[in-house]
Each structure stands twice: as structure tokens, then as C-alpha cells.
Length: 189
Image 1: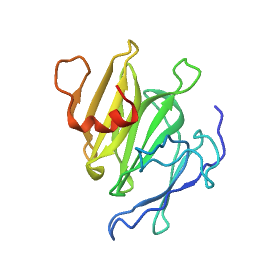
Image 2: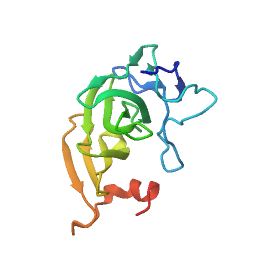
Image 3: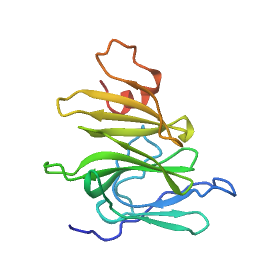
């Protein structure tokens, strides 16, 4: 397995409160755009590397946590991507990408840490995670998945518990829920 050097990226954040650790630095690549103000940009004057090294989270107050690429039921993780810090600055999340027989690693799991500990791991069984976003100030997470047959499905999860609040699939006949507004801006239907 190829290990890249450290990639460190500064995201300036306010304090989260005396008992809460606010993420201040993250590493690896991410996708950011004008409709995604909380994404950690992929390349900035502070960034080095391409997302295939460990993820480093530095909290205000000096605590630093290194999240290593892991080996789990999806196999050997190859990269971190779409790293985002929640608007409430209490949570940080990213996509974990794995080898999947394609030219690029496939994002198969969403991982979210809340106040310095892992709280959510959402796996796209039999598919990939296309995109995700913190909602409700960071209390919820919206996830877009795609199956090999091209079907897309959207999920709304509670950040702290990982429980599914709602899901929606185009063509299901159900009305498009308002929490999908981010995906409409970032990925028009």
C-alpha cells in the first residue's frame, strides 16, 4: 500500500465552548464549492498531499488526533475525501474510500466524529456515496448514494446516533423532501 506524506489544511474556526473540542485543522483532499461553505478545500496554501495519508485533526486548545487509514469489512481504506466541518463546529466528517476494481478508490463509508470521538459510520452497501452534507447546524447528515445499476437514494441521519430519520428515492412517487435542497444546488437533477 502506498502511503503519502502528511497533508495538513487549516480551517479557521471559532470556539465551540469550554467542554467541546472544535476541529481546527484537517488533512487530505475534499471537494468544496460555493454551496458548501463548511468543506475543507482540497488545495490551499496550507495543503500538501492528495488525501491518501492519515487524517490529522487539530482542536483549539492544542489536542491533535491522527486518524489512520483503516482495514475493515470494506477492505483497506485508500483515501479520505469530502472532509467537512459542521456549522456548529462540534463535528467533522469525511468519506472513506476503498479499492473497488475501478481506476479511482470508491467512497464506500461516511465517518463522522462528534466532539472528538467517532459517532457515525454509514456504509453504502452495494453502492457508493456520491455526496454528503451536514444539516440543521450539524445535528443531521444528508447522504446521497448510487447503486451499480445507477439508482440514486438519499438518506437523512441523526449525527449523534447515526439513526436514519428519513430516506427518499427518485421515481418512488413520494414528494421530494425539503432537506434535499443542498443536493439540488450542488448536483442539479
